[in-house]
Amino acid sequence: MDSKNIPQHIAAIMDGNGRWAKERGLPRLAGHREGTEALREILRACAEFGIKYLTVYAFSTENWQRPKEEVEFLMSLFAEKIESELEELMANQVKINFLGRTQEFSAELQQKMQGAAEKTKHNAGVVLNIMANYGGRAELVDAMQSMIKEQLTINNVDEETIGKHLYTKGMPDPDLLIRTANEMRISNFLLWQIAYAEIYVTPVLWPDFRREQLKEAIEAYQQRLRKFGQTEEQIKHAA
Ligand code: IPE
Ligand code: IPE
Ligand code: MG
Image (cartoon, rainbow, N blue to C red; front, side):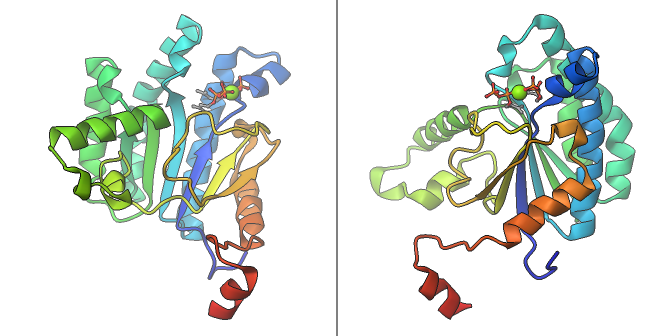
């Protein structure tokens, strides 16, 4: 790995928990639980590799359509993990944010999410964004509504203004977008922010995506030539 070309911001669509469990003859819920272990390891590896932002898709606005039992389990897993991991997050200087329409969660869960964000807000280590009840379209709708509320006029709306009204305001866009479990789609994740992210899809299921797999993803990223619309010659000349 080239330590001079580390992505500043990695986003991950944590997919394949259900398949991981199915392969082992376990209930889907066991896959979600193991998925939290993978996230723990990835978060640590991000700190080790010098990645500043990690944004993970934990629950989409579409995931409410899953069986009631699964949705309830995921909600209880959020609550349980916030409680059990907070101490370690503090010790590792992680700043955690829960981004999405979190106002639709139970009051109790909202309180836990806000409490963890509040407690870690001055930490200077990795910024961990847990995207929960998140949808890229919902985020854009929310951004437009807040701009209208502020009575912004036509001349005041440009790309920068929109960026400032997203849940990820103040953060750089992801450099690398990882999707596990081999699905070649975005599933309503970070529609605006991934405009120029490098995409890495792996067949590895999320619960098996660990430090070594992250390292491979970063190495693949380092092989890419990011052109941002320019020609190869221009990019190489500038470098
Ligand atoms: C991702 O794993 C976790 C969530 C969407 C909450 P899945 O549960 O989608 O796993 P598969 O796609 O069924 O294998
Ligand atoms: C995307 O995974 C959402 C999360 C990882 C939280 P899904 O498993 O819900 O996506 P689709 O339905 O296969 O596109
Ligand atoms: Mg899935």
